[in-house]
Image 1 (tube, rainbow over the protein chains, first blue to last red):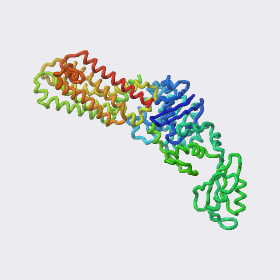
Image 2 (cartoon, each protein chain N blue to C red):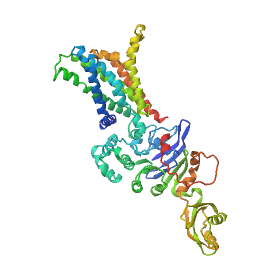
Image 3 (cartoon, rainbow over the protein chains, first blue to last red):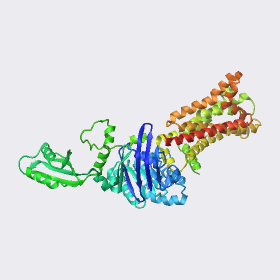
Image 4 (tube, helix red, strand yellow):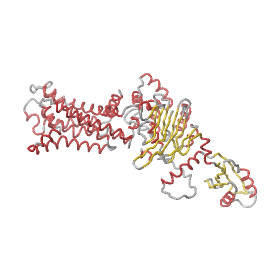
Length: 348
Length: 245
């Protein structure tokens, strides 16, 4: 349904996309991930024929983006980042305008609107000026206009960025629902959403595809699993209660442990995060070591690597460049970059 | 059809903001003052004619109305990002350019039409200040229409190459100032050398005086239409260039 073939895009001296190839098949809901400025929006703009690639090609629903941009646009619904909509129109006027532009007749439009109002939660705001709506509602209107012609393909650029948690959850639920018979390419920063709504993800970084596959495969990509260990800080079965240094030393010495990082917790416990081999299981070993020391183990957990960690790992060099680091130093992730999409917008 | 929908939306948006009303009122006021009071105005001419209207209207249109109306056309859509929403609908770029152009031109023409109140009120009803020769009035309005078509196209072109409405306003103002005012001066100065004729021809006013006198010169019609088409074509290219930048 969506086919991108060695897409490159150069803005002046800045290489926004570098040989990006991927395919999205019918009925797939694919998460399109990457840090800000990685080229997500650029890719989407190429797929919607807003801009042209510097080299490479793409087709949507069998239509080439160079030869037949109108057919491409007809077959898809697109929600650009930040849902830019005319502020001087009411919601109804705007959706009617879009429907007219898409060639819908009045009765089809009305019947589609029933569904859209329900799905996007617009019943209360149909008569309001878009300029007076909150960001979240504007986003809903943007989603509404993408759905108005019931397209087989949806391209959504950060559809949840301005929504509150309830709205996000609802939208994700809806995407799951419509994703059953539609093809959806969804870009987002929120990895939880991808885990909920998508079976497959494409991760881009610095204009390149760094991972593409089922979520399971991507999670396994780093070849590690994650352990969380929480030890009581106040009490011990024998001896004195452990200090965080002692726990860290013990963990670092342990065979098979690749990385130890203290994670924040309350003042009654020490919590650490470890990384271990994908195939191994360190839980028994950890338990025995703590029993030997007489420390009280409050929690011990083994997770598959979180998508978030994989994302961090795969896109870290991006972040380092942006912050002006040049040489490698040890792990400094988990600073929770809650970016807001500004950078990317400017580059477009 | 797309073109008409866009034009309709554009025209409507002028009237949902105060812009259209402000421009119309201000122009009427200014035109009234110029027509009746400045240099003795209409009374000084002492003939049943609208010469003064056609003399001053181009200044009002080119130096105030057209820059204000056209500044936002594409610049605003670029800076707010709505252009992306519009263009990713199944429309051609030329339909966007033409639609926006027609929307803006529509407002300017509405404004010009509101001045018809002058000849009607003065020579038909309620006052009858003499018998007016309708020929020059009609040709004068045709001239104003053609001139506005050209001016609006220039404004659209300038709005399509910038993101800033302020810049669009001033550049359009300066360009039209050059075409309406400067070429008049320069033409007068350089008249002896023969260059004056050329400079005069480039300016709007030499063509407008013909229309106001009741002379529909094909050269003038072609002149205004060429400017219109040429500007629209460049605006189209400018819009399209976003793809390759």
